[in-house]
Length: 194
Image (tube, rainbow, N blue to C red; front, side, top):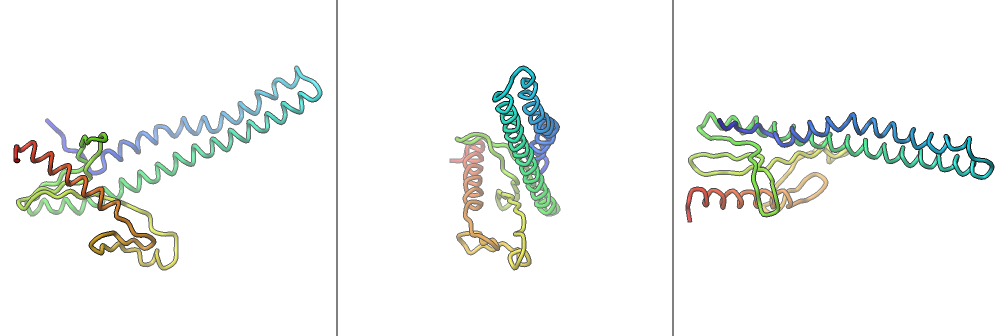
């Protein structure tokens, strides 16, 4: 039995990996500054004069450096977890809408794993119907922080690019184009259509 993948399954797996990494990262971020603070201080009782001041300075410097490093690691992990969770939400929201097409006889495949020339990737959603096959790429972005851009948060397409409230972009269109081209070649090869 081959199980179909759920929408965002790859992101869900990445989210679990990040959550598993959290306790280890927090422990390291808390323990390392303390260890680097006390190690030089332990040597103070065997030193004298100028060396004591040097060890105090080294102890404080190591503590601060480790603290900044640890906070950076925890912050980076938190931001990546937050972004993955947002992406997962977006993929599932789109999947919920696409799944309504099954009422009209379409088949929907989510998070389709692929292998391209540059390595593994996935197709977020593939819709198969009597009229053809469509690839749908999901992108979920946060709204701008404030002002008119937040109040009027819409994305428009002018025939060449996506127009967001605070930027213009073609990268999403280029990605879905590459994905559709890959799927077309794959299907033609598998179905022996030349």
